[in-house]
Image (tube, rainbow, N blue to C red; front, side, top):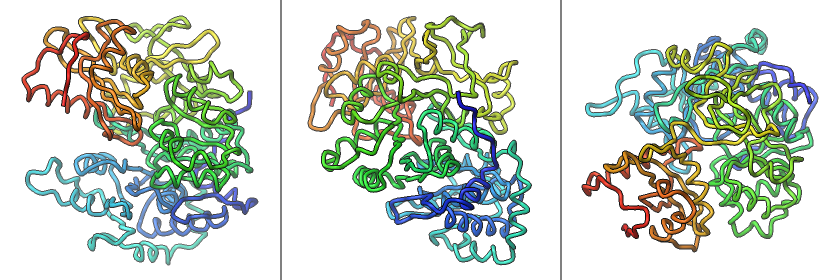
Length: 552
């Protein structure tokens, strides 16, 4: 078993590569193609500007930008000066952004706009100037500067002013600041996706990120300086940030998808000869596989693809590219991305049916959520873990921290899982994603796994809605495969003879677009929408599972 890589302050990683490696560090579809020395020089200039704006060690620097070079530079530069990066979810609207900006105690906020219509500067301007009737209040006076790199808001600092702030900062001053950063300092304040509640801020150290990314990349992807790694996950997400620093540590080329578009993504993978792909979610990978150019693109250089999907879907993915090994994973912000990972050398059965083994250096146990006692292998319980990549706790949340960490330092995740006899883990969904149907426990993931076996179903999400007869019943939201059709009656009939009656969805709704929080579906929005619909129509009792119900 390989040893985990040594820890390093994040701001040192690119500099260390630049000293010996003049290869390509970063590729983005917007024309960005920087060598390691070029990236190091740009990051130094950015860091000097932060110092010039008065950013001190430990200050919180917010980043609300689309996936672009400035975002990458902000992450590296903030680490160089010993400040804490606070990446903000780019899907957030005014009320959500206001909460994060206020809760995170930002000193400086970096924003921009893009050609796709995302205008973060004006969003922030509205947040900072609330009007009567808005769902948010003033965030206070902690925020000293807002830098608008796109020049949309006159009252914010411009790019020229930001660049000019570096004028009085010498390279020696910057390097002195950089040399004072400790590996156990907080590097990132990452807010969880908030699919079931308000986002919580996870505190991650330089050590957790600088050791964990390369550890996963070496142990499971065999990543080296010869590789190119393709990643479409947002740079406000651990799945975007941690693999990026892993590539920089190992000297590989990090290819980010920018604003994800399937055709552009496919061309980047092909033209850059990417060897390891990290789509992670079927909503990202399916459009690439279904793209008209896929069949004629030479992707023979791809050797590993990390996805999270049902066993059937993972098998389909491998059949589409049989020369590339599909692996899956369990990950969370609280563990700086991956806790478990399948290995490319594992048999297909293991790679598609399990989450793999725990990453070396991390430790996991499965406990009874009521007693806290460990349960035997093959039995489901709550997944708990600890180790070098574990976060330091939730920001300004002492009561929550007291509840989620036990006396041995294990974090109690709230996820259901089981460990097989061979040591591989199986996921059983969130405990909060459990339904109580007539007194019976039902895991949403079990129904979702069944639904995607229907040939017309592309993606399925199951939620619970209240019911006068059973207390709660399942409801399924479904996205259909292109050019295929199905009715509510078709879906219900498909389920009736395959799962217990109480597990059969009583409501089916078809969707073409999902409410997303980063990379996760906001199930509570689906649930609230359906509840409002049922309340409007005066429906309090669901139709029986064998009923044929037609909806508009």
